[in-house]
Image (cartoon, rainbow, N blue to C red):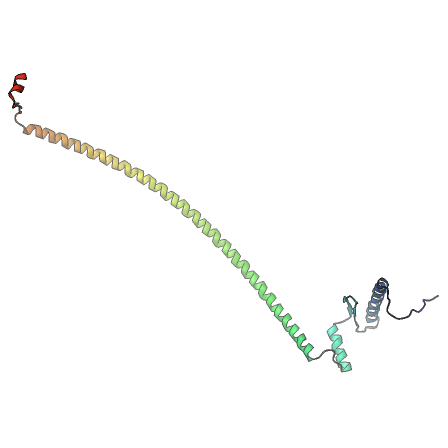
Length: 196
């Protein structure tokens, strides 16, 4: 008992239409693969669903198949404008590849610069730490020198005061030896004489 023939017309029920599309699409793609393997044929199938989704199978490059189609039939599927677009696409792809190479180089350069910058920052921080230590050490040394200077100034002042004291006593002794007699004060008013 075989299948009955169906009338080939649009299926109105959308869910039935979708199921039929899915089954028949898979069948067509399966048959295309089988014929390409079994018969060593060059096959290309492209199917667009009503939703716009594309399904395809190609045993070799689609461009090669289309070029062969052009040669054998003499028909052009696209005109010079589309060929220019194809050339433009190829040029953009080539430019994109070159940009990818340049981008990789720039990324390597960026990494090298980042590493260099990190190294410089580390050296700068180390230098600042050394300068702070040196400054602190110099400040401590300056404090010690200031303290020694004050001690020397105090010792010098004490020595000078001792010398001044000696000079004063020496002068005082010299002054006393220079006075040969003593003065006696006589009051000028008579009543003051009587009291003494």
